[in-house]
Length: 55
Image (tube, rainbow, N blue to C red; front, top):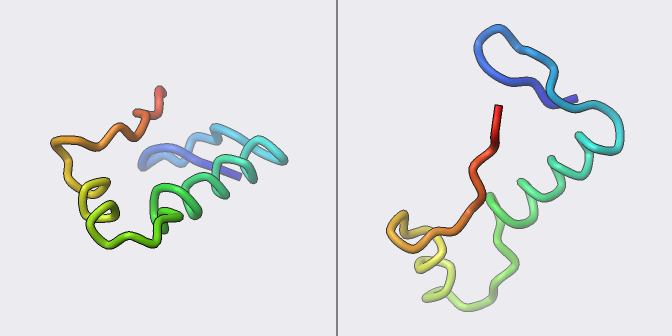
């Protein structure tokens, strides 16, 4: 389950939620990059291209 906001409105459940959580864990929190300079570049808010979640 994926919930939004302080009121914990359910956004996704089941396989959709699982896929979203997997993407967050493997790409946003722990990017699959072995190059330290590239990791820092991805973390820079000026060049980050992470998609913004729509409500």
